[in-house]
Image 1 (cartoon, rainbow, N blue to C red):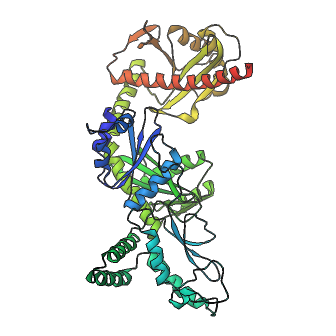
Image 2 (spheres, helix red, strand yellow):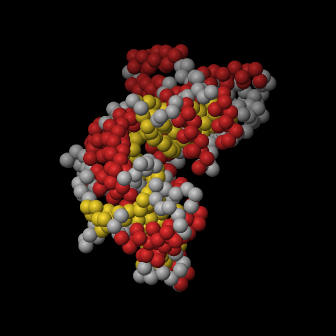
Image 3 (spheres, rainbow, N blue to C red):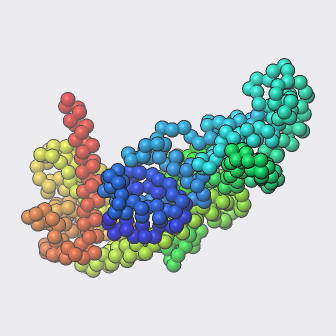
Length: 535
């Protein structure tokens, strides 16, 4: 178990929810549910586990979790997440049917039906119901008896047994008014919203009567029905009765750090959450405003509605609505307010799990960033770029360029270069790349350029600036030893040895690994295309 995973496990909330085990590539390999996230996740690492669990644990490198309110929510969310991620160690829910609903139809003579399929045009839906204690079929019999709506799919021309039992208004032989139907509809809505006190009292009396005459089977059935009715009070907020895409944004603050959380409902189902921590220097409203603008301008698949826990100023609200074409609402009560409360509960758990780790990481990053400024005698260091070249036997040559700002990778500024010319050396390749780079970016140069290599590669970059008579930024090379391990910096014709145990070294290695990853992934794609074309 790596230290990051151990830290997260030790700080898991002791609340119900879902957990996602991830492998070394951050792929979700298993989704599970728990009444107590802390206890359940730690059970995987007990020494007496079986072979299957041992195989799963061997691949676990990270964990993500969702906090929910009750078992019903956990089951529904687990179903949605398994269908989204298709984890290799999950079996049961990948292709199973959804959990059931009850629907009050929009027909002239409405019905209350039990269904697995959601269609918002069909009527008003209640559910879904997923808890193991929910006795679906017995529950259906009960509500059929309580609410006298029609039971037949096609209205006959004569009365049926349900009419004689008082369980149907008999639209087949009676004129049933809209007022009668509206009254029953209101009762049904109240019932499914948890106003069930009178019904439960009546059922408990019947349970006692059954037990008194030793009819324990009937008493047990009534007990299960009571439990099912009580489940209605656990309003679930994981699956909404809508086919729209809706987002919920909440936030939490600790010290000078702001954590923003976004729950994304796709077709009414909670499928994704985004949680990010930032140091903030402006007001909370301006920081969240800028986050929303940047996030949604990059994402074309925007929600219909964004519910947010912060009450924006009228000016900012108009700007967001106009630029993003999203309806933004600050709910003050009801189901949407409850979902935002759940978002913030997740953020509190996320902060507890990640805050100290993030703070330490930020301190190390600031220290390394300042160390780089000091070594290079830079008065300011806001931006840098790093470049690497990938090829195979001089074929399919490509280059990757990554960008950083104040220690953070800015992936929108990453660039790829295809080297079509037949160039035989790294020197020629770097000259070619930076001639193209300066043709577009001469007016917006970084404070530092990092090349994966030593003297030759750095000299090549500087030669382009000299040729074009442009004042160059600082240029350094990451030098490797005979074992192909980075161990020094080339700068101003000097070799500066690195302490491989320092945070500064790890920071430079992180940059080198990121530019190599970006470059090699582009090369593999290009090389595969070339191979297929030759065939």
